[in-house]
Amino acid sequence: MTTPHAIVIHAAGDLRIDPIAEPRPASDEAIIDIVYGGICGSDLHYWQHGAAGESLLRAPMVLGHEIVGIVGRAAADGSGPAVGARVAVHPATPAAEYVRHPADRPNIAGGGYLGSAARFPHRDGAFAHRVALPTRMLRALPDAVGWREAALVEPASVAWHAVSRIGDVTGRSALVVGCGPIGLLAVAVLKARGATHITAVDLHDRPLEVARELGADAVLKQPGDAEILAIDADVVVESSGSHRGLDTAIRGAARGGTVAMVGLLPSGAQPVQISLAIARELDLRGSFRFNDEIDEVIRALADGELRIDAAISHVRSWEAAAEAFALAADPTVSSKVLLQFREA
Image (tube, rainbow, N blue to C red; front, top):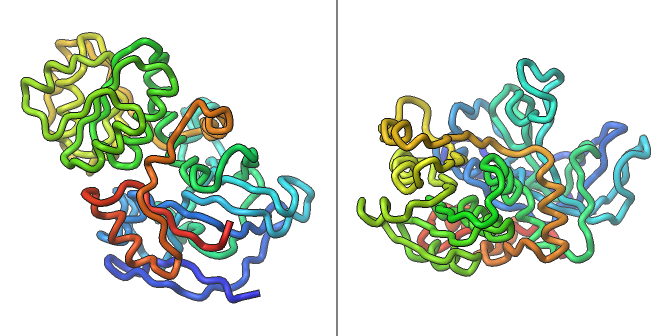
């Protein structure tokens, strides 16, 4: 067995491939041989800035939470899937108590996440050859779900949760602001869940081309005020993570419309037209990570209801992590970039 390696962030701009010790699983953990890992925006933030939002990097940390793999060793306590099972991973660790939050919304009650510096010691991620993971995180993959689309299950669950925050979108017009990976997947989810006319907005040509492949009926590159106001969408998914994007979302929403805010804005005050949201009686709804939507996403992929392959732009070997991160950071040439750790 070869020595396992991991992709480790040491400081802003300091991404390394380090040898790591063989994982030593607890009784309720399985050893997972990682096949693919998707580079997330938070991974890029740790690499570029040494922080993701309020989560500051204080020590070297293994990155990665969008991962799929094969069970190499089953959990000793008999829980979870058997050796050889193909699995996706739900990377959250719920808080022990849901203080002031309903039990069906653990995503907003704290807890941990793979590859997160929100707490110290940090929670290592899973960009590695082999990792030990609790069986509660594992979701069996149906044969009908291919490896590459399975690698998008986690971010697709984020998009599914955002659309769920809006409610029933059947027969409603939709606007997606920002066509990074989450925005693109939101287009696909809106299409799968019955939105009738989807408009996608972005700053660059390539993301808009991919948005069309995933189901957008209209695309707008850097639209002007008149174009934005003319969209008049019943529902909006804001996924740019910028105050300009949120302002576009508010102005592009129809009176009485709903805006799901999934793009994580920087901390601090944001200059947006809240007065317009008040006058139009818009519902502005935050959307953070996801809960059990991962199971709905896997089912929708297996049924062919949800199609997301077009969101993948590049696949690179784990040995080319530096190149892969540079690609993922350039929206003019990439959407979702996958790292491959072993042959599927």
